Image 1 (cartoon, rainbow, N blue to C red):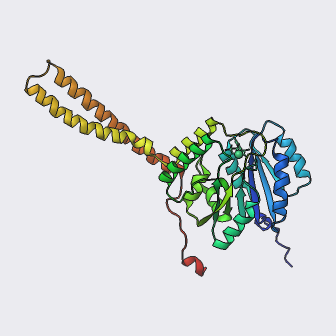
Image 2: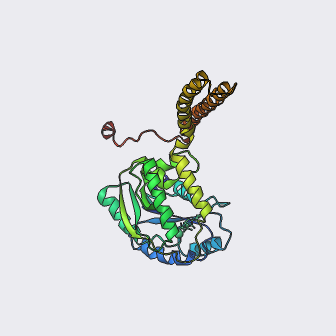
Length: 323
Ligand code: UDP
Ligand code: MG
């Protein structure tokens, strides 16, 4: 007689994991739990709620402990020090066990009720990713709307049109998508760009961005800038290439100036020594920029290699059907 095989962790996998990064959210923990729980209980699916406490220094940890006592599906992963929203989300994706994994903000700006629509949309359209798209941002400040608009425009340029505009980190992902994200070795990844770049079939669900339920934003200007710089440098080596273009432009300008200097020299329109000094300065400048640009090209290659992203994504291989 064979003994029953022990349950493997994936057998215990809930149908849905909801990942929630929280940093100093003592004002919203109870509101959030009270609003999320009935929504999830009504889904009729097994679930876990995975709160990633991003090194909160207020009473968030204690409130979470309290909430956990009468909500068995609530799971808390605590980071020792504040790692930032994106890193906290990454930690959550790494540890989530669900067949589907959703990520949502703790401040109730992303309505939990939308999760049901996301699951339905994923299954109806056989999509791996469902982006929550803010169809109405009137509750955001003028400044936030303006900067967000600029951000999504630039990023769509850089990463490609498959980055949905106005989709933050409220989304639903299949297990395959989460596994693919977890395999990316790069640090400081920006999930809202890295996920569309994977190219899984996706769809969108619109929602109205609500006002923060309580407390204040944990995204000061410094963190917004950090996200923008990470987005730009994470998805483009164009800044490194600037020197190449300046160098090429400099070289062309130098060639013209050399002709000019030579004519001036021949027609005796110069003071002695001017031509040689001018030629030396212009030529050395152009050569330096070109060399810098060349370095930039190699650094760019190193950087891309180091990020270790897949260079292609296989959608389908007919041989897999036969096995
Ligand atoms: N957050 C986090 N770590 C941080 C900053 C924010 O985990 O360093 C969480 C925060 O608790 C919230 C989410 O990220 O659940 C979005 O932050 P917030 O609502 O403050 O940003 P905003 O909506 O103002 O852009
Ligand atoms: Mg918010």
